[in-house]
Image (cartoon, rainbow, N blue to C red; front, side):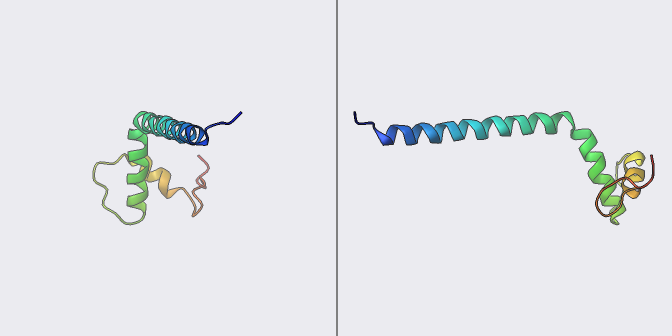
Amino acid sequence: MKRKVRKEKGQAIVEYIIIVVIVAIAAFVVLGAFSDRLKDMIAGATTTLGGTPEGIDERSVEQAQGMDDTGLDISGG
């Protein structure tokens, strides 16, 4: 029996697109759920690197200052 290769290639592309869409939706959900925390962490890192502390949580600044270059907590808490 002969199979149509074109049909299988098209199916594979559709499957890859579906996987990419699912991963993108999952990423948006995770970012939406943790957006406030991520914003505070990025703002704390910006302040630690010499940026302006506009509208950030002081706890995030303290947490960022208690990290070493690899991002590990060295403050003990």
